[in-house]
Amino acid sequence: MSDERIREGYAPPPFEDAEYPDVRIYSLRAWDRNQRLLRSLSRYYYLVAALFAVVSTGLAIMLCWNAFGPNGPPPGPEDFSMLGLTAFSILFYPALTISLILVGRSLAVQKRYIFCLVMACFIMLGGVIGIALGISTLIVLARGSVKEMFKRGERAFEADADYD
Image: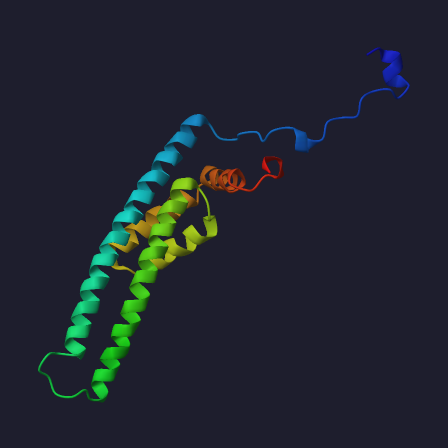
């Protein structure tokens, strides 16, 4: 286009920022390292979920056996507290196991950042293994490049109107 036409106002309108693709701020090496860390954490969450499933099953069997022994006396008031603890463990541990599996999957596909943060804090109540896993998850999730990966992961799985 000639300089005269530009001065006369015939210049094409400038491009909007929405038309340009997002610029990657972090290097490919950092992205690869974060991807490997998130996959490793995902595997550890699956292992801890399996451990919690085994422990919760054993705990529920033990508590049920103690609350309703085969040849024990009729249940008294203290047995109802054991029954409450049994009911709580039967409901709580499978829910925790399912949420740990969901966190492992979320870390693998880089979705649900806040949920992963909350569960990383919550798993630290689960003993030494939980503390180690929770702290390492918080350290990895605190990186700016990982936050960016989670933003892109959220965007990658949104429904698009073009695919009807």
